[in-house]
Length: 317
Image (cartoon, rainbow, N blue to C red; front, top):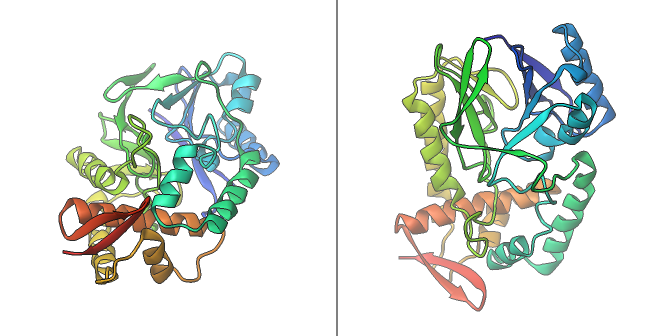
């Protein structure tokens, strides 16, 4: 199976995103890049270099629905005419901005985020909406765990690997244990488990970090020889990266627990302590990281939890 990486520029701090062309019949790309002139030009150039045009595409598969990965999906689908878009049902970013839901506001309020900050975050994500078109529920085909994307010379096994987002998916080529992992696995960055409503019960918070740790262990069970991430270089030693991730999570967990004082703290308090200089999108990501670690610590009974009105307060045991 011929996998062709195409580096696509983004306007985001993360830098270029990796789009993967599966140069087999039916011609497929995994992820698209954001909806910008620079991105579509780079994608067209990458396709031409491999001997194809956008009109040749038959499948557009999304690892998850963040703007840098899904932004061009509608444009490419429309240009290719016969292309089908695939994404997991638990993704919501492809339908609406992630902070438009009332559920997100409630989660941020519970985390102790002040109203002024919530408005700043919403304004930031409103500005990001231009980098991706939304999809209706009838405009995509669902990815299902353990199903397969079939090609002329073999198949890719769909692995639901939640954590970074609830519906994040990876794709396994079992013949050579190659994985295309989106933002589940990145060589030089520890992915952020993003604050999300639970897709089954939106009134609850999705346990992003706990799910992410399970996803990393699941990928490890396949003993991958090569992992293509959503950003940066491919990973040839997943075992080393797996242990590095776990050490980083353990260190962060210890730091978070150490910030839980007798008077009690909110996730917003912890985020400000850990990332005092965070701005723009990093304000939201810092809250996401604080919530994820506090949730995990509370689940493992390392800290206590109580409600102060509608605000979640964490205290030592």
